[in-house]
Amino acid sequence: MIRLAVISGKGGTGKTMITAALAHLLPGSLVFADCDVDAANLELLLNPQLIRTEPFMGMKTAVIDTALCTQCDKCMDHCRFGAIERDGEIYHVNPLRCEGCAVCVHVCPVAITMQPRQTGEIKYSETSRGHLVHARLVPGAGNSGLLVHAVKKMAMELDKGCNLFLIDGPPGTGCPLISTISGTDIVLIVTEPSVSGLHDLKRVVAVCRQFRPRILVTINRFDLEQSLTDTIQTWCCAENIPVIGMIPFDPAVIESVRRGVPITDSGTTPAAQAIQILAAKLELELRDLGKKR
Amino acid sequence: MPGQIMKLAVASGKGGTGKSMVAENLAFTLSRTEPVTLVDCDVEEPNLHLFFPAPATTTDVTVPVPVIDETACQHCGLCGEFCQYGALTVLSNRILFFPELCHSCGGCILVCPNDAIHEEPKRIGTLSTSAPQPDLKLISGTLDTGSPHAVPVIRAAKKQAANDQLVIIDTAPGTSCPVVEALDGCDACILVTESTPFGLHDLQLAVDVAARLGIPAGIVINRSDGKDEETLRFCIDHDIEVMIPFSREIAAIQNRGDLLCRARPEWQKDFCALFLKCRALTGGER
Image (cartoon, each protein chain N blue to C red):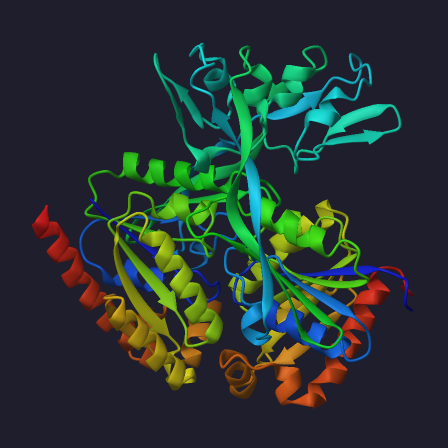
């Protein structure tokens, strides 16, 4: 199984749109994961039929038994996350702030315990091109990196016979992104010709290089600012990163998102044609990688 | 108005909807009449400094991590058992420490019976402060690439602006801990969306987060193309919506690293109006 993650650094460059189109275009047996767990959108384009849902338990969180609490303040003094809150004589733990370290339990063995807490759910679904593992994080919850790990694990275990594991990744460079790219063979970075897009591309490449997947770039809406597209291509060339796709601005993209279908469904629009070329080049990359194994 | 305080966050759920554009243009416009501090809390991919080039003073953001004194350590294993993050593995003759897993909770020090652990600062990012124009202070938090924990950098960036009057905070996309940390303690937030199913889906999550934190939220629909009915229907319960139309010209200005309100000053009145609506959200006068 080859593991391919579509990522971007900057948000909103077109990861999900491209992932959904690749889901339709890449050959072989596929399994998908939406690892942008706090704003998961791939399901809006792949029309999944839910097979089952599992609860996601993040880190345990501390709970204070107010009947046993002596208001000694020790938990508050030792908590480094500001999670202990006091309302008159009543002490309680703010679950949005608690990081599950259990230091409060250690300093107060009487009134505080660590309790499991559901912070999301993992969904296993059927699509026309293969199974999709997606998730929903309770808004505001932490542990998104752990949830990403759980999503990937489910896909790799349940569909281990597939040729390709295609991942729609999160923006950024932090914990969910690191969890997404760890163990991948190829990352496809979707960027755009803006000063922010280029800046964020450089940062996300620096993170990827700590993991050694093959790095490929595609420039979305490349014709909106040709001079920056040139700058991105020059930089990628100097860094020895292949730019394997140039997707033009195309109003049909928004239309297809509104209809809830991949852009390549309608065949012949400029963006759809460009993504077909991107998919063909990716297919060669995947074949090369397959041969090396 | 001087002497009063307002902290306003710009968030979105979905990435790339125009958070930074709104934050930059608000700060640029308001700083023409009063001091403004603009804080970049999208520390994984900070971009505001690209729009306000100026010499900056940079300091390190550090977190305390344990250092084990091998001469005092008896390899009893208590620290490894206690650590909820798996950051310490105790072998028969040495300890393995994985700093990227450590949350700096200090628990290992508390449980060590031999006083063999102390803490030393470890750099995870930087804070850059600059004054790109009179009455505008920019504080940018930047997470080091490869470092997973954004929250301490966000906390440090906000702390640097703690005593400032009018603070505008640009957040990361999403709805998880970096967004919660950035929104925490703000008086109001603007949620920037686009009228696509992606934008609306993630806007609903962002509204949920703001509600959980008890922060009043208003909505900006960016790149409006006249097909905004569904988003507007959702917005009906929220008393501010501002529409910024889709225009290749606006996109081009921002893509090149310029500011809409600098290149097209006629837009300043719209951002002034947006700010007044935000102030109304917090219950009237500052």
